[in-house]
Amino acid sequence: NFGKRVRGVLTSAKIMPLVFMRENGGGKTSWAIKAIYYAVDNGAWVINNSWGSSKFNQQLVDAVKYANSKDIPFVVAAGNRPKNNDARDQFPANIEVDNVISVGSLSYFGTKSSFSSFGRRSVDILAPGQNILSSNFPNQYAGLYKSVSGTSYAAPFVSAAIAYLKA
Image (tube, rainbow, N blue to C red; front, top):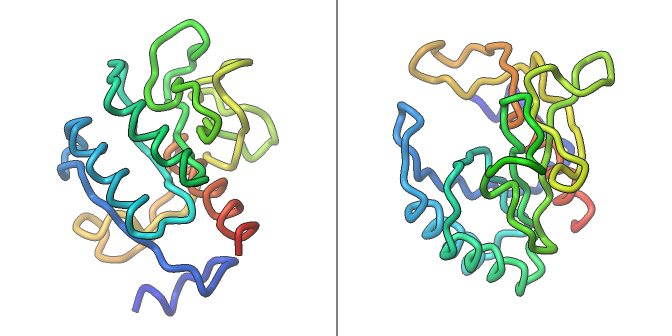
């Protein structure tokens, strides 16, 4: 039923949903690392990361470098605290590897959303991330759409554009 209501620009794309977080939003970086290696080893064209942590993890950097070695873009949400990521720890957004694309939120007015993290060096692009209709709430809204905001909703726009270009 969902596929009949929503259609993207790349209709032949296949999504590899790799869930490593609990329903409450908690999870471990080690689980994310396993998901990254799985995605790389199983043919992902682009890896979207709508999550973040303030803790540096070398194994995470190594996983991102592994994706880079296979020419897989690693798109990340910049964060939803209106702070400069150039001056604070935000991972994986602040990982300095060539394939990392850190995405902030663009408002419907064409400006940076008030909640979006930013950074001249650490945030690469802004994409729509404010008042996005999402059906990502199956238990709460029984398949209905909800208007949501955040860099986690901006990052998939960039991932989709990259997948379209690669196709």
